[in-house]
Image: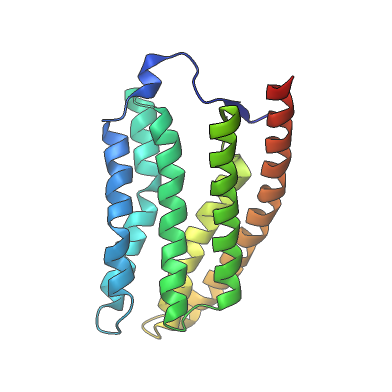
Length: 198
């Protein structure tokens, strides 16, 4: 089952000041930048570029952490939180502009809020951290690819049609996997609580 105690007894896991964690923090601090830029027609392209950079560097911190032995408990939490915040913030910003449908934003934001809150409760009360599932990573990748493509298409600029034609199927596929993975996380959480209660 993809869950385990938050502390595995390795002191290196408790480090905070690492390069991957710094990258994750920079990604989080960059969120207000693209949110503001996406609100105006004159700066929307720059905002989208910043958004793509924030989303695409998701693999950078994890790869550096694994290759340099800087995997930490903080990083295991900070990296997915950065992903969730960046994606949710982008969806809200685009919805405010009328570029993205409210229903899609609500599904993603509410799901993420529920998952983050549940993860915090598991960690605080039972000392358990759920491991990220591969299907969750695939879903996140699809959403991160679909949202910028849809945004570009709605900006009505060069190749807007193809961007929408590709963006929406990718996003909807990611959303379906997202919801499927949520049910698996619920099952993982229930099993983790039972195991820790024995």
